[in-house]
Length: 434
Image (cartoon, rainbow, N blue to C red; front, side, top):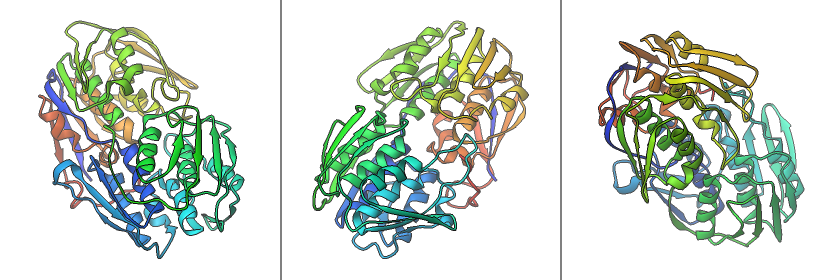
């Protein structure tokens, strides 16, 4: 099992480039199910979840060429024949976005059998909103032996009002509605950039969609979709992680190839905390030569402060003068990194959904263990400023969503190395819980 060895104390300086967004790439790969023609996706990140999605599509009969090492990380997907429309547990148990194939499979083939998502280290991600939406569109859905089975001759347009905002639910039903008969109106939709990215691909495939990126989306179903080429958005969470890395290390770091408009909430908090952010068209320069100041955050749906940046910001808060209140409103169990940060010397108290961080506290090296994708990123950030060498175990979590993060950080001055097997060629597959 791979580990990171990180020696803290180096301010990060230079330019670090962002990869494509995993959370955009996964639904866009699932959208290829909707057509027999070839879909070409550019800027696909080389991370574990993408390989899992490739295996899932291939198991259904699709042809998938990930094409790493070529220009733009170009991926070709052709679902000419979906001989086995089943998302098997042995594949999807390692990826939380497995429910994204339910809607497109049902819309394309009239049948889908998908393993139910299991438990998650950061909290449950119920699929009931997917089910209610598909039932409103005429699907018959049953559950047995850990699988959902959905059937419909052809889905019908419907009005769907989400009980709560759900990114994957919005994406799943958006894909299903593109081939439904008539008009579908979805309200209380997620507004995340990843939803807009998926909609842009679907429109390029011939779908008729209005309002993506707002809380109300209208879809006029069509008979068929065709092939298309699409470039995936840059990963806003990876970009945010690197911005925090520059700030926490007291460096001068430019995060290139990002979309600053997707990072407004984080940029505002970094400014409040004393880090200087200079924004260009597709890059952000962060500098922090002085002391950081405490600043409270409360996670919200987009465009609020992202839950996927909460753990990383908590690492920053340990190095800020004063008391920071960090409130988690999206997931009920997303403070599992607190005990590991405490092992490094952080002063954090958790009361329900709020963590109180008292800083500035000196961090010292320790052996720590990652519990999920973003928690692992927070431990790496803390290690960048800790005294001595920190060992971060179970980094297969971080490999799910960050493309060779140790190489990128090393390129801007971090003392970080990986020991163990090399991802992804020889690394044994470990169970993923978040």
